Image (cartoon, rainbow, N blue to C red):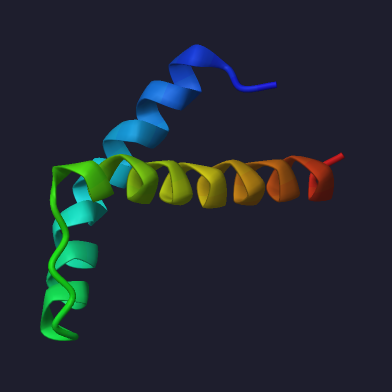
Length: 60
């Protein structure tokens, strides 16, 4: 279950890495528009949630 405050922090982290991801794709000749940003953010947030859950499991 995703906590709202954590979700907001994850969103901020994802947004801070978005320009780097966009630049990487554009170097590869892949243009991304605003409609592509949302699924990309969701992917980054899914990764962070999985990593968070793993860390939580390992600390139990």
